[in-house]
Length: 128
Image 1 (spheres, one colour):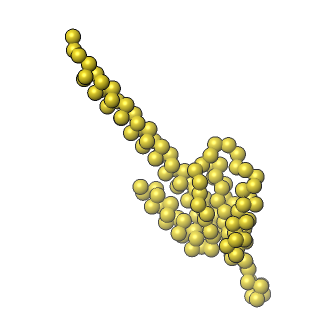
Image 2 (cartoon, rainbow, N blue to C red; image 1 turned 90 degrees about the vertical axis):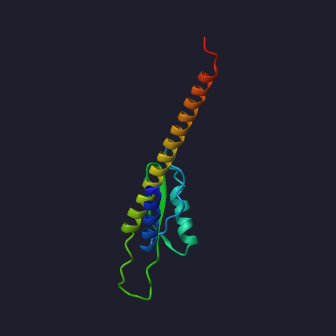
């Protein structure tokens, strides 16, 4: 539960730092599709932003969008997406860790259920 709270905090902090963190799907085994960069660019454009970075962690991708530089402010440096990328990466890592913990909990629950069923079956067998 602490990991999920941490992930939410990281996501809010990252979004506040001019990045956008789209929903992160479950980590997959295998390569990240080449289309992921184009999907990120389209997602940022739909938000009126520009793609800054794509964060890849454990076969999952996260998009980092930033507000385009203001053309009316000459010499203004575009905002850096480094902090947002770090926040996005942390959110992905936290999500993967939470998924693994949930899977471990499900496996433990299933093992306990089977053990309990076996114990009940032994107790119901007539004793000789």
